[in-house]
Image (cartoon, rainbow, N blue to C red):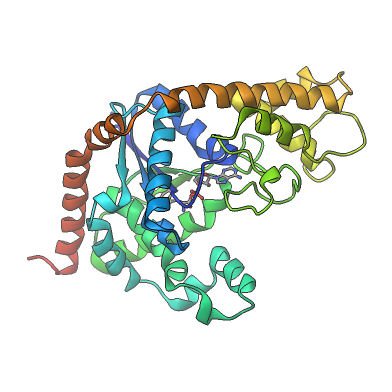
Length: 336
Ligand code: TYM
C-alpha cells in the first residue's frame, strides 16, 4: 500500500507553547511512531514576517523552533524537516493561487477580521501579508500534495480555504491535486488548549499575560507556579465539563494528553480526590516532567547538529516541490 503523506508546520513568531505541543507536536510524535506514513514538517519563517521581528530575533526563533522539533523527539531520519524559506517554489505557487482567490474570501477569514478589529477597523494599518496569509499556507500544503495536514483546532478555517483552492485549481486547470484532509484531534484530545488564567480563550504564544501560557522552555519553577495559579471554580469536584468548568477541564485535557491516556481515564483517576490544590500539583508534576525532558535534550543540541539535520532531506524535498510545481505550471500553460 502506498504511504500516505502527512504534512504539518508552525510559525516562527515566538517561543513554542504547551498548546503547540499538545495540539500538534505530540500528535506528530505518535504518527512518527507508527512508521507507516511519510511525514513532512516545516518551520514557517516567511509567515513569521507578518509580525515585525528584528533579523536576530527571527533567526533565534527559527533555531529555537527547529531545535525543539528535535528535542521533543522528531527524528529527521523518519520525519522530513525543512525551513520554509529554503524552498523557493512556494513563492511562485503562492502567486498562482492568489489569482484564484477573491478579496472577499480573504477578508472573511477570522484571523484577518480579528486583526482588523484590533486595529480599530483601519485596514490601512494591517500588513497585506496578514490578508494573504491563508494563500501562502495553502501554497505550503499544495506544494507537497499531502493526504493529511496535522494541526490544532484554530487552523480549521485555513484548511477549508486550502481545500477550496484545490478544487478550484483542479477544476480550472485539470490538475490532479489530492483534496487534503485536516487531521485535527477532538477538543477532549487537546486540539484547543486554553489560557490558564482565562480558560475560555486559547493559549497563545503572543498573549500579553505570560501567566496564561506555558512555554516549552519556561523555567521549571515558573511553569509550576503558572499551573498552580490556573483559574478554576469553587466546586472542588474534578470532572470534564467545558461550559461549567473550563479551567478544570483544561487541566484534565493537559494531563491526559501528556500522559497519552483517554480523558475518561484521567477523570476516573481524580474522581474522589476533591482537592484542587492536590490536583494542580499532580498536573504541574506531569507538565514539569515533560518540560525537564524536552529541555535536557534541547540543551544538548548545538547549531552544527541542527544544520546537519536541516540538510538531511533538503535535496529530496526541493526536488519534490520542483516537480509538483512544474506539473501545475504545465497544466496551466506556463510550461510547455
Ligand atoms: P502556529 O505556529 O500558530 O501553531 C502551530 C500548531 O500548534 C497548534 N496550536 C494549538 N493547538 C492546541 N491548543 C492551542 N492553544 C494551540 N495553539 C496553537 C496550531 O493549530 C498549529 O497546528 N498557520 C500555522 C503554520 C502553518 C501551517 C502551514 C501548518 C503555515 N503553513 C501549512 C500546517 C500546514 C500556524 O501559525 O501555526
